View 1 (cartoon, rainbow, N blue to C red):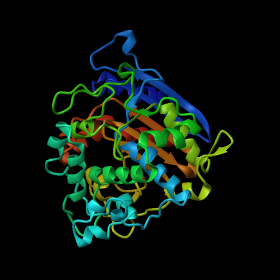
View 2: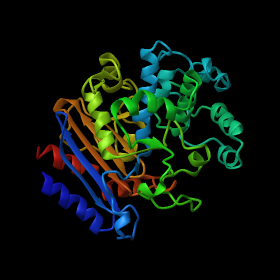
View 3: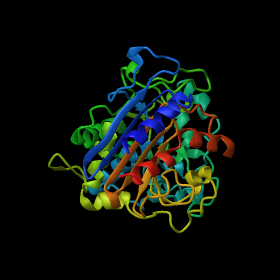
View 4: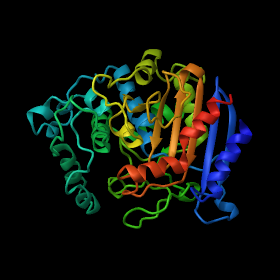
Length: 375
């Protein structure tokens, strides 16, 4: 297996598909394979730019399952929140229509709240000008795109709103709550928002406005919003992501401590939570937008799954839009972490053609098949 993974990743780098990568395969709590490849910066072979095990990768939407989802379930554990509470109980401004007044936390977790995929009109301009109050107000007051509870539609806007809801309950930024409740107890020393040492981060090109994406997230709007969000913002390493995944596979236990209860982990990671209304995927883009999910996790055993053909019915995964992937398969006690600095300027993933190219270039499906087929 090791030689095959080496050849797979080196082939991608040699063909110019991405500059660098980290790959880790863990099974039954042990690391079977861990290696860093290539450069943090495209076109550079300088020794100081070499990817190491300590290089931080922009994991974008994996933030949703490593921060937003577990912080929410920690609040449920502590009796501070329930899934069927309405959003307007915490963000009254959200209730701009009768339908929106009925949207629950569960709806936001399932992408069934009617929240549009597109960013609210005027939000980018307000955030760029530093008027964050206005930027968040237009988030909350944006019109529903569809009747809540009738459709699954992936939306970073929805996740940002949920992140603000959680911050209103905990009284601190998500970054601090995640560090206190998750990262420190699990020993994740290289996982953070807004990394202070940008040169420790793998670069992912430039944004739509030409902003250099090194230690900063891809979307210009989210950069203006401060980068500590329920949707994106986290930087991490393959090693830390394995530690997080191992904690989940161990029922919430880590270092002889319970980070989460067994039942909280079960509720966070098992079953299709949008089973009544998800759409059978007909493409890779459709899979992420409206396919089967376990809350913010992608349900891995699905047509057009990013996680290959050998996963079990218990497998879950999460994709980060800058070229990062995490697979957890409890049936095989298996973790696959695949991090690249492929990059994702805002308009890269619009439409089927660009999405197919993104998946073909990085090809997590083939890597997962290679791992599972050669254990």
